[in-house]
Amino acid sequence: MNLYEETRFIMNKYGIQAKKSLGQNFLIDEEVVNKIIENSEISKSDLVIEIGPGLGTLTSKLLEKAGKVIAIELDNTVLKILNDRFKLYDNFELINQDILKTDLNNLIRLNLNNKIKYCKVVANLPYYITTPIITKLLEENLNLVSITVMVQKEVAKRLTGIPGKSKDIGAISHYIYYYSDSKIVLNVPRSSFIPSPDVDSSVIVFNLLKQPRVNIEDKDFLFKIIKLSFSQKRKTLLNSLVNNNICSSKEELENILTELDINTKVRAEELSLQDFVNISKKIKP
Ligand code: SAM
Image (cartoon, rainbow, N blue to C red; front, side):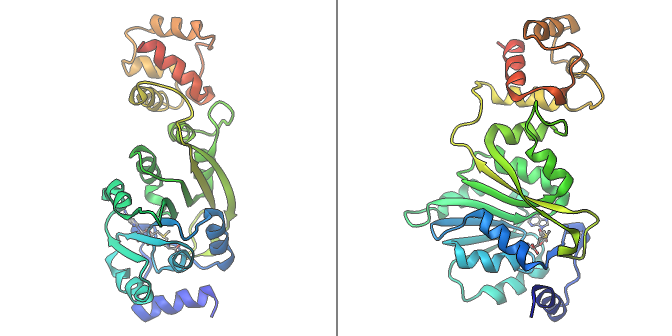
């Protein structure tokens, strides 16, 4: 049986219909599965957190490679499938929960030991919550080595764009660049899934940096400025920040930009992370 036939067989056997509302597009391309596993560089000293195991396609390969796999799945109709498939594996744990409500810090702390030393996230993400999941993984200060995830192709470009160099970026690109080295490792056509989504996909690897890329005392203020700067896309940085009351006056911000040798008509997507660090330090010295 190939992966397509196996997936169809499991869906028929358990009476499963893919749920669009949960972003369910099941992988049916063996080569893509192998490449995800290869790029995630999993070994027996790794704890893998898999978000959304679905029918268990990635899970079964992860279980062969990893010290332990914790799969977090919201859909309770697939739990029986996963428990039936992996009941013989003592390195498998299934948690029926919303990933966005899961205390990952605690989970990682409880599962790392002197044999299983590193934690990696691997997932074919539910696309409707890509940004909140990635934000959570980066923001919660987790003890993670890497994140290997499948996302929509267009989103992948934005997530891996280097601020100041790439035009197609958003606030999240700064976030990712602050915490990690990221790269697209594979493009995946829509035909690699059932049901086939309306868009193509890409696999990204984020390698978490030991220290954040730039030095800043008030990181929350830096990211508040970045978020507000991108909140009104067609506006200049000056207008976005003044409209959001970040500065007392337009003149004050104009002076700050001029002092930093930044054009006062600049837009958020033209600035590097270091530019934002410099601006935020001047606004809140
Ligand atoms: N890993 C499987 C594969 O590659 O075939 C399924 C991937 S599918 C794109 C996304 C999975 O995430 C689905 O199984 C879906 O039920 C699950 N999911 C959706 N929202 C979730 C949430 N908030 N927390 C945990 N899992 C979720």
